[in-house]
Length: 109
Image (cartoon, rainbow, N blue to C red):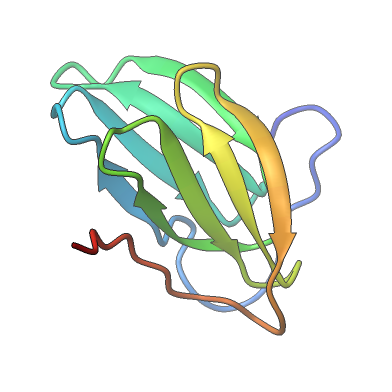
């Protein structure tokens, strides 16, 4: 289902390509390539908690270890969106070059 003013992204691939669970196991983050958004759901009951608009054709999503932020690679916008998970608001959009697809979070010593 598309929200008001949403235009579906047409093309190959999956409707939802990226999912991640917060480190406390309480929240599921899912992207929607069809309407350029990210959604949060409570676990285990899958109740919708909120959504955030991000760049076009969001692909992979990764979370910070503290579960506070989601980083979403936006393939058609050539950017990565940073989303505050608590408020489900896009904090910033980082230009990263052509067709970002995969991202990951790592802890360095």
